[in-house]
Picture 1: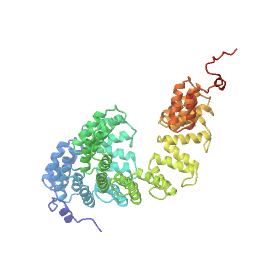
Picture 2 (picture 1 turned 135 degrees about the vertical axis):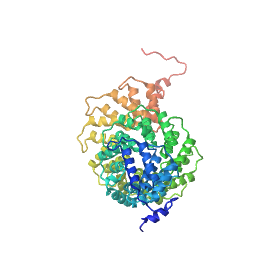
Picture 3 (picture 1 turned 90 degrees about the horizontal axis):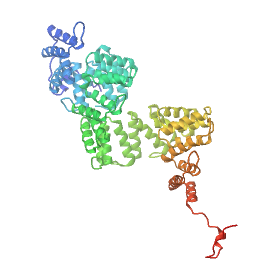
Picture 4 (picture 1 turned 90 degrees about the vertical axis):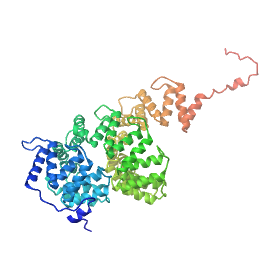
Length: 604
């Protein structure tokens, strides 16, 4: 079915837009439009002056120029050179759209996307984008690709997403807003990924005075996109006057302050910036205000306030909020525990394209929380979430097939799912693949591949993979035997909180195999670290070191404490050692034979 509309049908379809015949602007108005563009961009001898540009756009718009109406409406929407004004933005953009202007339709769609002067309505946003795209708007074509890619306002359809991206990429670059080209090159949507091109178009957007230009430049410097990482430069862009009027830039600045990313950590100011973005009407700001209340950032934990602000964000169709609300209802935090209500939020999130909501529907279905327990449906939800980009869904599917719950055990399919998650950067899946190749679980055993995946996960900080790599180096399997390298990996894992890492390091120090020398002091320290993290074998070994004064002073009381800890966890060796130290010595049989009351003579 051809969804494209003829121009008369397009005009009649617009809510509140009267049909009007397009009238070419007069030469005077055309000149006003040209002069407006020059003042907006600062071309030639004309100095950039957005206020003067707004005056000239208004003059042209009042004379019936649809293009000028679109620019003026956008300026009222974004507060570029004139104050933000939802009513004026809606008036001028509807008037422009009524004349069949693609730019007017595109910006009118943005109002529905952002809830500026109207309730958020992603379906209307997508519909208006389609109309603008059919009239030749390259920006609308690109955004339609996003809508199909993420299921925003329409069905999720990767093939349609690719089609719209490719169609947009065929348009002359002069027909795009620079920011659209910036994200298309950054994401590889329609064009090959090109970080330098993305940076160049973001820089052009900032130079031309678009409100989102400084934010994008800040993000480029923060993330090293097309330019070396430079958090200080990012901070300078985020604090420019235009950026401080951009709610999304406020959120980006808050993220820097919350994490202490190359700036002094300031969670109080971060929380204040989130509130500022929320008060400006940005759903992402509302979400982060809720997140601060949920996690005690910039103030005490306040679950009722978290529920309130997540609900505000959800009412603006901000899909991140739905799964967070669902989990608060599931756990009964800030509200009465209610899995049925949680499921309703998850269904709403799924309807608006939240892959995490779809994943959680699988989890709730697998466990029978607010939904009938159904393994097949749970698997289907996980599959949908994975296909929509939720990496954890592939990892969960991998475990379902690995453990045979709630589907029959299938090691080959388990590996396929882990591989999808691993290829998307899920570290735990990379470790799981290493284990599968090491032990031939669902694949032909291949120690080289096992090491490759362990190395991949280890570089991302996975301590279990560090321990496995250490084991390969310690035993010289596939790699050259190198105890020093193994020790380094064990210590690195231990420093990240791995009790196994400390245990393995202790064993190497104790044996001295492949090291410069045996070191019982370092062994004792490593066993103490492992014991503190709950390693039962380390508790027993530390008890032995303390009992016998190995690697440090003898301490029977502390040895007893360590033996008792291990004994309480069921260790028989620890129990024997504890009883040996606490039982009274056996009575001499010869003394038992002496008559009562007879004095014991000292030996001669």
